[in-house]
Amino acid sequence: MSPSPILALPTELLAAILEFVFDDNLPLTGLTSSATGSLIDTTYIASHHLQPLLVCSIFHRIAHISAFRKTTFTCTNLYTQIPDRLTQVLKPEQVSAIRHLSFVSDQRHFRRFLDWGNAPFGVDGLRLKKLTIVLQRSSFWHYLFDFTADLVRLLRRLKGVDELIFVQNAALVKGSFKAWYNRLVGLILKIDHAERYDRISPNLDYTWWNWHFDEQGQSFSLKACPSKSFIDEESYLSTVLPLLEALRESVDNEAWNPDPRTRNGA
Image (cartoon, rainbow, N blue to C red; front, side):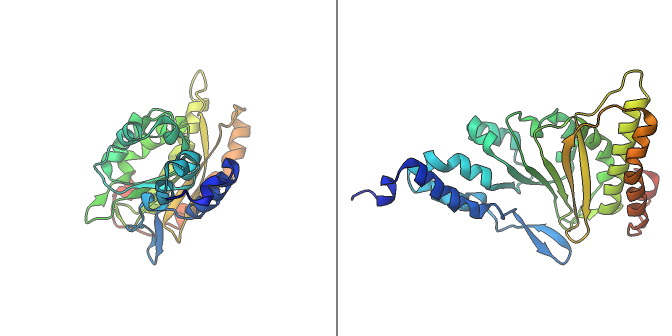
């Protein structure tokens, strides 16, 4: 059998064609929309969108890095050890090519936040544009307030993630998902002020985050920004005052929830 004429194309042209093929993967996030907000798309499988790489070794050699950059990788198995999968199954250049990663989480994943150090999952090679944490949907409740402080500690030093997204996924959240978001934002601001002005030597964060809550999707995003430089306290307070006002308004608009955990700071 004679080789396909496409393989006779110059490498640069063939690479450009394959780039175009994998551009179709960019809009695919592994999520779907519903009346209750964004949900994990249980039909989405990343490997299905990488199948052109299986055509031949030439396609794989030329395009696999680009394909990884444009494909959202998802993990829906709660028991998968994501760091092990990344480092034992993939080559370092493949790990560093991943830009979009999504995983379903429960309390075990939240407990491991401090184990990450300053890199997602503790894997230094990851350079993610978007990391999406999707709450497990089941009959069990998520007690997210228990992990707020640990998450803030992680956020202050986290590198290698441009945008962090939390998706409720119609999961049961004690105290409400929006209330937890507000407490998280409030603690980010509180800890940042304390670390700057209540210490002998200021302890600045490595990463600052801009936050936004999506009412329709019942999700929120944290977008990484450079750390704020150290300035006098009065000037600092004037810069965060709009954030505090927006937070107060968001708290006022929380849906009332009878669970006392929303009122006692648990």
